[in-house]
Amino acid sequence: MDASFLFLLLILAGAVSATDDDCKFRQFPDTSSFVCECSSSHCDVIEEYSLSDENFVVYTSGKRGFRLDKEEMPIRNRPTPIVPDTSITIRIDRSEEYQTILGFGGSFTDAAALNLYNLTSDVQEKLLRAYFSTDGIEYSFGRVPIASCDFSTRAYSYAETPDDFYLEDFQLAFEDIDYKIPMIKRASAMSSRPIKLLGSAWSAPGWMKTSGAMQGGGPLRGMPGGYYYKTWALYLAKFVEAYSGYDIPFWGLTGGNEPSAGAFPNWAWQAMFFSPSLQRDFIKLDLGPILHERGHKELQITILDDQRFLLPRWAEVVLEDPIASQFVTGIGIHWYWDDFVDPSRLNATHHAYPDYFMLGTEACEGHLDREEEVILGSWERGEAYSFNIIEDLGNWVAGWIDWNLALNMIGGPNWVGNFVDSPIIVNAEEDVFYKQPMYYHLGHFSKFITPGSVRVGSSSDRERLVEHLAFKLPDGDMALVVLNRKEFTFPLHIYDPDVGYLNAEIPSRSIQTYLWKSPSNL
Figure 1 (cartoon, rainbow, N blue to C red):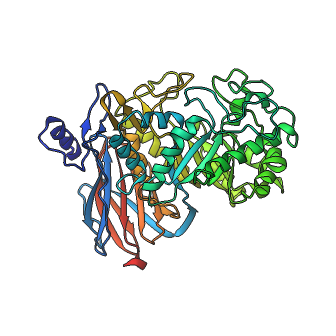
Figure 2 (cartoon, rainbow, N blue to C red):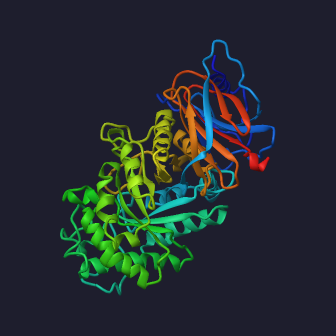
Figure 3 (tube, rainbow, N blue to C red):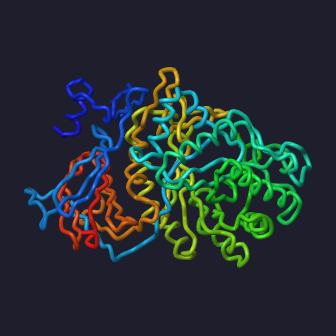
């Protein structure tokens, strides 16, 4: 019997008692795995590690048991003999360097903040610590909707006065002041890493759009360089300045959330259309100059913020322009069509424009009409996250930002009923929250692959059995993430020519993160 499966049976039967730091398992009917329940009296934390010359550390999460459980094992000078040989060997090549990692994170939506504040203060603290503290998964990115999105309880903007081209009546909403800003400040205070905040707008106020409404698609009135485009650029600058007034600096802005959705007049929620050429000219004539004039040259401007299938064409149109390209630093990518779009588009985009980072800026499960919105304990959704992260990072993407940090039991609130799943689900009636498998899959990256890490070469003698990526961390130590989506447990030999063999075992349907000292640190 698989050891992880036996462990889960013992936990569920009460034969193994959880300590204060362990997962409090909760299995819901008809789900493939379990969640970890957190309350005012209990919430699992991640055990810290230290590396020695002789040993390596491995963290494991599996469908049948374990959630970021730590084990320390000796480094050997040869692989462990296996008869018959069913082992997988992964060879590390630290001389083969790729992109520098920016980080991982989630989104400070209105819905996430409302769900947080539906919990008592002690449980709120545990939820934020689960994401941002050193005993959690240590997110380093936060995406922030600029005004309302579908995961708000209403459609609102910061400039409701028609024809207010100088935005004299611009003001943040109570959702910012009472919910998102306090949430961000609390997260930042407990984080040992700076949280990079990325602002993204779903729509301009209705009076700026040809449609006259935030809900549904449509472009801004006029053309880039005109009143409406300049006012929209000023709006984005004023948003950054308003948050700065609360001592919350922004790392970057996108050109707008999913501009392709704005091509559909009857889009169910807030959307605004930009073609590649409209976005190019808006950045060149309006957004870039206004941000520079107002002292925001440091802001990272990310184009696209939309689906992978729009690459590399979108990047070509914007970045081939000698003026627009000077204001842009990166390309944002959503995951929603990735099952149908080959990742080679990412590789091609990087090689055409190697000086611009690519960043995953939104992902969630439960978004398709045929899907159940929230599935408590779905291991498959966790696997989908980690597989996509490995695929993206294996094709030059420098980071990955999840969607809502927390949702309620039906995947909301969402003012148009577009409910989806989340790594953390809040059960306000019981004053608890549930850490989903998605949370732990994300943690295998965000906790250990710190900003500034560099992806290095890794190759396997059985490439179709497991997915893997290796990294050199900022302190020189090494990390390897391995995903096993098969129903078999495999002996694993990780060979670092400069160190030796890390001999271990990867359970069926599991994900692991390996950590060991680099020769320069021995």
